[in-house]
Length: 218
Image 1: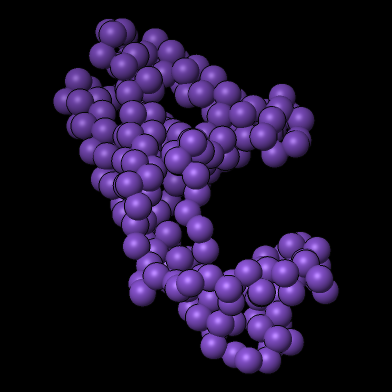
Image 2: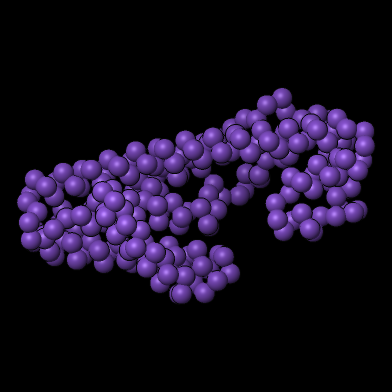
């Protein structure tokens, strides 16, 4: 029931590359729809504006959903905590705690460990009346917004620098592939998987998702 310590990072090593990946896939669905043979200056401008605007909007939506998820999770935690404290049956209290634990933690906390957790929860002076958002949560939401929004610009900038559209598209795609690989590498390293292989898999997944998005009119 306690808050995370203030020394923890606002976004963990899994959340950061994940948000960058979301932003990359969104912007690639726009830039991938351009045709070097037929796209004019006006069309390129419209696509770039649409890509930036879409990622800003998606970053805002993602940040709001993050805050709502935090509130829902904390509200559920408080509900379980009150139920455990309200029952006088120790076995029922342990069962409530066990049901709230995700797999595989539910199999690890058994017997004395589960009873110790129940006893500590019951011994608390009081629980909060309702779930609330802390400063750290707002900072995390802002970080999500920035990651999704700013991930647009490395892919968009080549279109502002290079005049031949085919060259701009190649540089943009190259930058996107590198970013996909780096994000996948980071995810693999923190997930205990092969970083290089995860990076390559993420590039493949990103390309497929972009193609599917474009094919569906995204």
